[in-house]
Length: 373
Image (cartoon, one colour):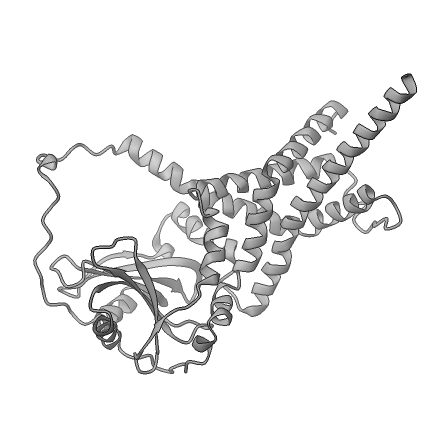
């Protein structure tokens, strides 16, 4: 059993970790609980999209690409998002030629490949950016909050030694601090397993890329290429492209059970063009399967199938679906939403408890000073 000195130290760590990260933790957790409905929010924010028909057999990707290029001749099609269980239409992400930062999201009917037009609102993506990047920083900041959340979970469980015995105790008639403390402990225990999964996966998604880049730099520091100072490499010559539908068929054959969700076009129309299909697997939780197809030849160049990779690759493939809850249906999303609100409540209630405790100590000190006078 931990000594009182150890408990006091853990309580201090728990309190200050919560206070220092409280506001950011609330923002990240609250936005994370909402972002599970990202696609539904985008449809709600764009009512015209919800009314588009869903095609049993979506139109040709090549027809879609030609229609978008005809409608936006001064833009480059970078990404095509395929319809899913929620969204009935295709989306094309365009970059204006000569303007790397100017991008447009365009909706395209899935049955006829007719271009509907720019998407008015991207509220769902706005919330996702808030959750993943907090708008102003790299993803490792949110990863650090995941570590802080694990610290809060561990210290909170230790310092509240009788938390399981008091799990059904709610003293509504007591002071604000007592009522809030009971709610704080109950929310922490009832959602404990979920909180651990969210904190761990969030920390992994935010920090793993940092460690990977650091390791790669340490062991594989690239040497400067001869002639690198001569300028940028000349672009590859123009070339005829194989049909995108043919590339999609090749991707499906390369990875059994592959369910493409997104198509990225790299240097399309040139000899080094690549069509990269990304999506999930019908028989696996992982959502990071990827197939790279050469645009000029239609040959499969690279395949990433988590089922055939090592342990760490498979573990990494599980992190995002476990964190965002996008591997199930609507019931799972509501489960993630409700339990996702509890860390936000813990952040808020913990801060209120700390402020009330501080107020009471200040008040007690003032009364003691007055009595001594």
